[in-house]
Amino acid sequence: MEKKWYLTCHKSGCSNLYKAQQALIQIEVHSLSPSIQTWRQRLDRKNKRAVIEPLFKGYLFTCFDPEKIPTRKIEHCAGISHLVRFANTIVPIREAVMQEIMRFPLCMNDETRTNHKITTSLKESQKEQIKNIVQKKEAHARTALFLAFLEAIQ
Image 1 (tube, rainbow, N blue to C red):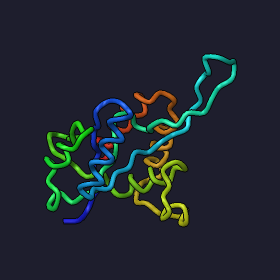
Image 2: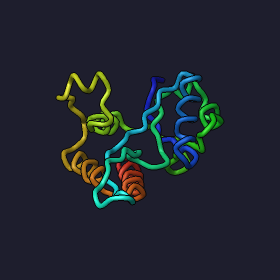
Image 3: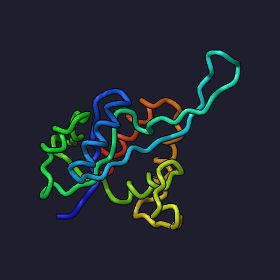
Image 4: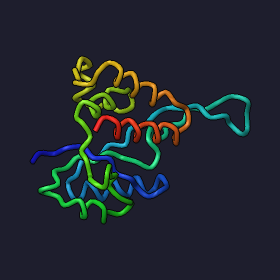
């Protein structure tokens, strides 16, 4: 088997996200926590300030081969709650979905930054759905819609 991306739930709180990412690095598992820039009203002034927050609150993506790294080892990492299951099974996320997510500005890495013309096997309507999800202002709404999207395309 080869490395695939899986959706992983981390314990609540930003510090647990960082703990989870550090623990995953130690067991040689790649992780991605896409971020988005939003604007929040300042309490001391009338203007707004830019804030960078996780795109899908409480979740991160992990890339590993379950035959080489047992899922239990990942679930026992500090800061990790569990791997997301669909119909009680851990299902990899389609590579095309991950490529589409990584194309967003705050998710780009060196590989995607140099090659903006990555083609995915997603239908235009599915790409549009992902864009609509990302544009939602409420973090919990984005997360719920993304989970429903993943379940629908499995």
